[in-house]
Length: 48
Image 1 (cartoon, rainbow, N blue to C red):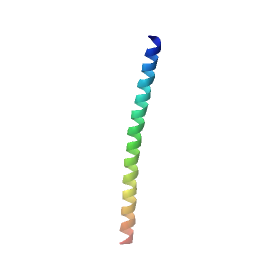
Image 2 (image 1 turned 30 degrees about the vertical axis):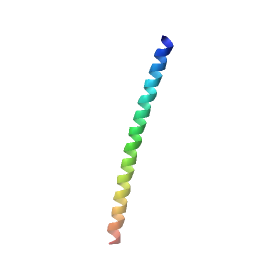
Image 3 (image 1 turned 180 degrees about the vertical axis):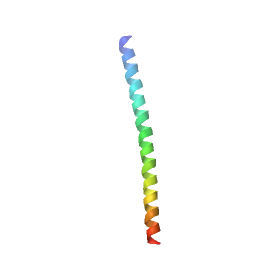
Image 4 (image 1 turned 45 degrees about the vertical axis):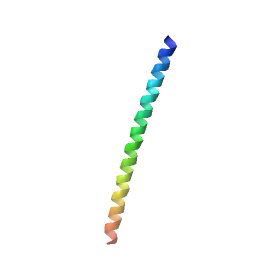
């Protein structure tokens, strides 16, 4: 009983970490995209 309880906690923690990380990386990707778009937009403005 005690062991399965521990395993359950571990699985839960791992799942939380995984979810947090995937959300985090998605946000980072989104941010990177925006920054890149802004940069290329500035470059485009300079050219014209």
